[in-house]
Image 1 (cartoon, rainbow, N blue to C red):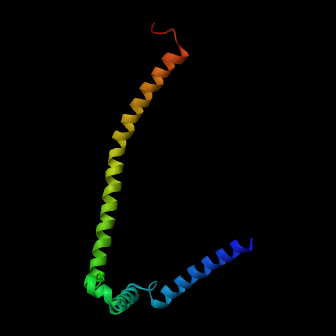
Image 2 (cartoon, helix red, strand yellow; image 1 turned 120 degrees about the vertical axis):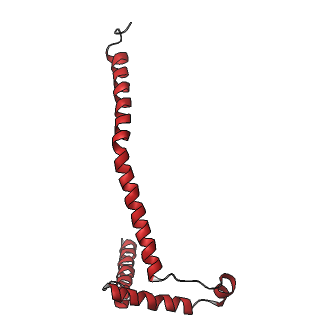
Image 3 (cartoon, rainbow, N blue to C red; image 1 turned 90 degrees about the vertical axis):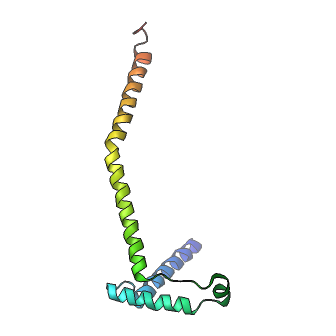
Length: 119
């Protein structure tokens, strides 16, 4: 009991701390605040790269806000297109399986409920 309480309190504290830290950095503010926070944090990430990352990988490049916006836009458009194609294919899909279900049900009725019909 006490152990589960400690686990749950720890999770709440970590979640609350993460929320507070991101709010304090300006992530949850207006768009301009979020952009400034992203620029500040990405600059810190690039500046604090360990030497072996710079040597072996040539340094880690953080994408610009324009690149991220383009990626989000493309991902959103891709999702919308997949949903629309699924919705447009639904009538054919339902029709195909309803015919299959109808024929299977008719066969079941003929074989099990009326065994002498058709002989």
